[in-house]
Length: 399
Image (cartoon, rainbow, N blue to C red):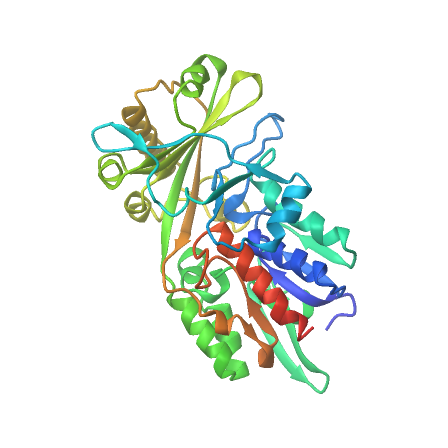
């Protein structure tokens, strides 16, 4: 290994909510070892991220989750700390539903809108940023690397124990770690081959060399998890158009199954902006997203970081289809409002998920957290928080 290669006690791949929560949970439990956080995106939060603009400093669009809910009787312990630091606040907006006949009704049980409702202050990405602040407030080294794609996972056993070397697409070593945590499923799932054209699944290749039954079981379960895709239309409306949207009796609109079938939309959120403007985010139905899996946004990670070349005509057709659906559903004017497309190939994991008994594999010095773990909060931000706290408890016995 080059002498300049960074070395760390723990490498965390993925700075979504669970990766950031793991760092905070370990620090709050008293562990002060070094951590390296590697993330393909331009900032933390993952699907709970907020989009900004250098040209428009007042623009903030929660393009994934407009809020999050806590349903368990015993909430994640990090929740209280985040509230005390005023990182999150209760969501007070109105949630209504719409059926295929355009009739408004009360909120429906979609799994994301019951229980305690919360939002990030100033943007949903405040949740992840606040978790990292909690981690740093406790002390210890926490290095962050954004815009960094991990392509290879290289485990190597020696007399001093097992070490993980993480490499990029060029085979360049990024970091050497004593322990590794994957806070998402991409490096363990066949979709990495579909999205990036890779010739193998990184975790599967690593597991073959380690011959650890527990890791083999975890890898097989992660690789089998199916996920629902999502295509999101992001609109920024000027005051003259925003006023009508801001006057609507809801801030979040759920589409019932009949409405999803008619318009191809699952949820719509209205997000006020400074100066009387607002953002509108229209989330597609799973069926619409599945039919357009090959379409990437020009500002997606695949385009910005991986060199993918989105077809502008494909992107425009998807944007046009979602815009027309939103116009027809709402009856509101959209005009020439600036539009963006955000797409996730696996926005919502489907059960059963990863058995929590395989979340920590001591023999291979690797762990897993995220909303893809079975149990309370599966498929939601609550699950990301709870899985990180559980893994932190297990790692304290190992690190």
